[in-house]
View 1 (cartoon, rainbow, N blue to C red):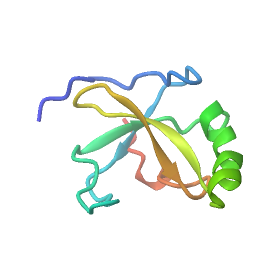
View 2 (view 1 turned 120 degrees about the horizontal axis):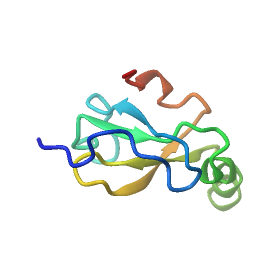
View 3 (view 1 turned 60 degrees about the vertical axis):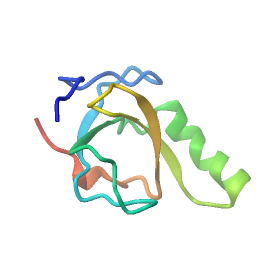
Length: 96
């Protein structure tokens, strides 16, 4: 699989360098996972979508969760993923 994004991008929401996260063993939704070996994720706990997400998801859905900005390495598309704790997915960070 050819990866379009060759190095960690900066988060469009806060400007922090994103970190590589192992996505191979992560299943969600339909059980197929992310369809890429890794994702770039903003793990900045001061990133606006992450900070505001806790209250937004509680107010609108009654859930304790937030969002982290992600980048797909195969096409460069930015999106969000849900995390349920401040440490969510931090154990899957791939150190360069």
